[in-house]
Length: 251
Image (cartoon, rainbow, N blue to C red; front, top):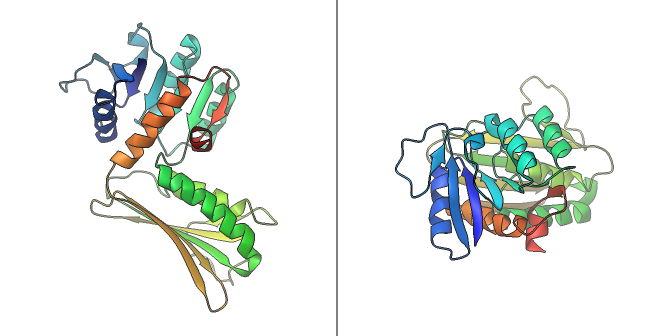
């Protein structure tokens, strides 16, 4: 039985992860962590992860970037693998995550969907084949309540495409102040926020007289929770410090 500490247990994604874990004989949510613990849950919940002193095999986080410091400290102190499903981290926070990965195993992905991670591999392949003859644009759409923009997934897809560029790509989020022709090394990233869109990502390869689009649509949040559960099962077996992602899980 894999014992999980679920950070963000009171949120929408936390609720889906908890349900999937309850349906899986290999998993048990042993404790939850959230800013609010007034919800009725089938496991003990705390406002601070340091308040829980019991055993655990892995920490799964679907909360917010604000929780990062406490999560890293708890994971290091207990030598527990950490699965970070949260997006919207700042550059200094990402540096902190990489620093801690020298001491503990940390899983992080811009998107927990298995389909999105396959899409990233396809984008990388397409960019390497099409080369500089095709411009790359990314459009991401999410619900009105999503706080960060662009999405972590959009950046992940841009990184996948940019890996095939001859020079470092320039990510452009707003062209309103620009009056110039589009440079070859540019990757445009546009964010749409509205309604209840779970998540849509389109990568556009625009060439001379032809356009190729690679697209992924999430129809429910369960696809992200399924990926998180698979990552938790994988990371519970990992003892070697380092940064891990969905490619390790899929392999």
